[in-house]
Length: 297
Image 1 (tube, rainbow, N blue to C red):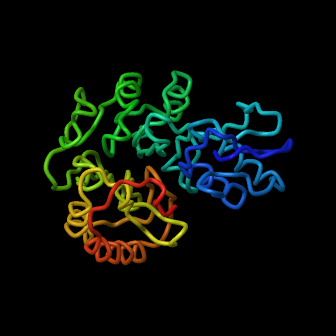
Image 2: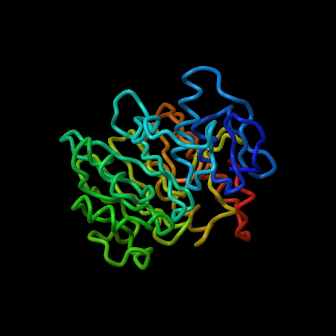
């Protein structure tokens, strides 16, 4: 990720697409330099080294390179729990076919899991993700993250979900969400149609604690707030603002877990206040040309 650094330590090579994944996993060690990621300094201690190993195994272009150049499979932490409950695990191994999007496993009380969006595909990775228990559903947030959905669903004997607005990206989906009304798709799991980024974008809310937001909104380290990627909105920024207006008072969660952009854990009340403020700001946005370089990571 970024121009190649000289020396014999950790580095980022020139294949970087500036997807932000490594910066999320190794903050302070990997940063943005001239529109790409770069290793800012070498790790000090085991915890920082672990962060760089996580970044390397997640990077969709395999641009984060350890000393010696070869990744150590034994240092692969994925799927990686995001909190002490182990309810949500980050899949890592982000796929170049989903623009490097994050994907997640949502563990349920009956020891099954749901996969939200998809990591890169391989049988060995599929075995890792189903090791904690059967995966019953693959939930796609929108068309951009659909690349490996059918393969994972077939491997897991799971149901593949998508919204009708993006159905052409997964025409063989097993379950099709329709309209704009929220739907409970499993005990404690709510699908909230959220047109804007794409026509068929969906949020998935779990246990009034976790919000899997796809590319509808994310946590920006630059602004230290929840943001919409208005410079990368394929369908309609006005529809995205309308989705926020329609749902803002009904979105209850503590964890913001996007496809692109950073994750954040805050109390319910603060998340709710920030979503209300985002709704107000989004109403003032107007359509603009797609510009990936303008995203405020």
